[in-house]
Amino acid sequence: MIDTDVLVAGGGPCGLMLANELGPRGVRLLLVDAKPGTAFNPQANATQARTMEHFRRLGFASEVRAQGLPADHPTDIAYFTRYTGHELARISLPTAAEAVRRIREMGGSWSAAELPHRISQKFVEAILRRHAQAHQSNDIRYGWRLAAFEDRGDHVLATIEPSGGGPAQQVRARYLVGADGARSSVRQALGIAWGGETGVRREFMGGQMFAVYLRAPRFYEVLPHARAWMYVSFNPQRRAFMASVDGREEFALHAALHPGEDPSTWTEADAKRVYWETLGREIDCEVLSFGTWLAGHALHAQSLQRGRVFIAGDAAHLFTPTGGLGYNTAVEDAVNLAWKLAHVIQGRATPALLDSYEAERRPLAQRNTAFARQFADSVGLFPAAPRLEEDSPEGEALRAEASVRLDAHARLEFNIPGVTFGGRYDGSPLIVADGTQPPPDRPNEYQATACPGGRPPHAWLDDGRSLYDSFHREWTLLALGPSPPDAAPFIDAAQALGLDLRVVAHESPALRELYAAPLALIRPDQVVAWRGGDASSAIAVLRQATGS
Image 1: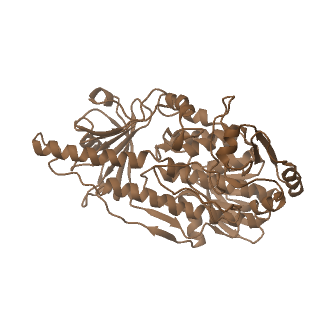
Image 2 (image 1 turned 45 degrees about the horizontal axis):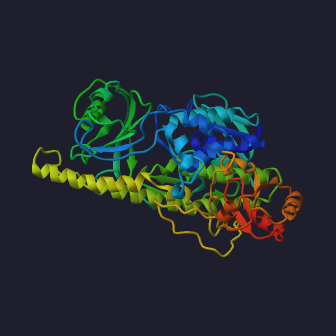
Image 3 (image 1 turned 30 degrees about the vertical axis):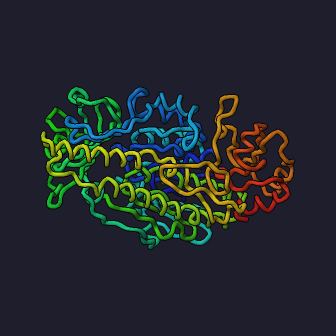
């Protein structure tokens, strides 16, 4: 019998992030995944800025930013009739090297500790696994699967077994997290149904998609345009998007299929044919893998918890990948759930704290899938005209129209600080409201606010650090301005409740103005739990913030 605190089914970004959050806290975790290792295929291709801020909090954002594309490789999103044809639109974004420099100069919607990073999920998973395995309390087992489980009331009894056959093992866990993907066996065993919508048909990003992971060393030789990170093919024969995986020769192509096409019979020759249709000519290439997936989902589980069992990541919400929100939402699921599990397991909070996971994350799943659906409609419902590629006045006019539409779409989907930073937990039982209202939730605009329930406003300190770098790893009480109120009541209350809280003082009047209060309580997941003018209600604030 294996005895552990948390059993995690699924070794993708969500499961590995749970291990990286719980490992440093000394919580015993057993993670199983039926695959032999982390992802081979590129899968998700964009790490949003908020996810990068969490990686920074854990200490490996720079390591993630050093992977994927070379530091000087453009991260533009560009639209073409075909990749060797006419360029229609482009949104220019900073390289990885530029992102590190420019973030310190940016304000407004992009006042942040980190900018997004264009990196394939396969690289991120390898980094997450390496860091997860460095913690002694973590037992990471690829090549093992969750075979069965039963919630016994005071623990979960589970059976795990090697994927390739062999003796099964029994596991006694205090909690189980199903981070086991869209076809989650944990969700199905719990009988949790999907809400939302699926089966949406669009000309692009709605219906069956054909994915090809390929190596094409000559692509940049034949490309007559400036390099980009993502190349979008817009023509009536084959619409697709293709992300550069390594900035040299590997690419991930996702092409829309037409009604009547049957990819179940397709071979590597067909995969090359589809690639050439988007490229506009034939060049040597090597197909590394290919398969199909279904776009048109905007699904969210109708519950995220049954007793001692939780679901997270793709098991809890399923996206059409416009906006790149699926993997990033999964990471924040793990960040939210992990500190709560640790507090309960270590006796810092009652099990009632765990009820807030669904209360906080389910509305965010609904919000984010809705934004992804909006982006998919924007690009997928705009048809490619039959004469778009003609060398004629009509063809030229159609391309000019497409340029305007696609440029507007690119700015809608790929400049989304509001989506990235604006997720909030308003209405959560853990958030101590102060009567103020947050700014409107808009995808392309973010207004920093310390209104409790959202991301703390960011600033760069005089010593060059991010304000976030000064936060404690658990609870932080910011004491702002030249003469902040006495914080002793919070120190005493935290000690009485067994909470790990640190007071962090910053004398800057600008920070006091930014937070619109001299005191602000920051949760372990870097969310504002409370702000106020004095510490007189410290014990009540901390009790509510921990669900006590």
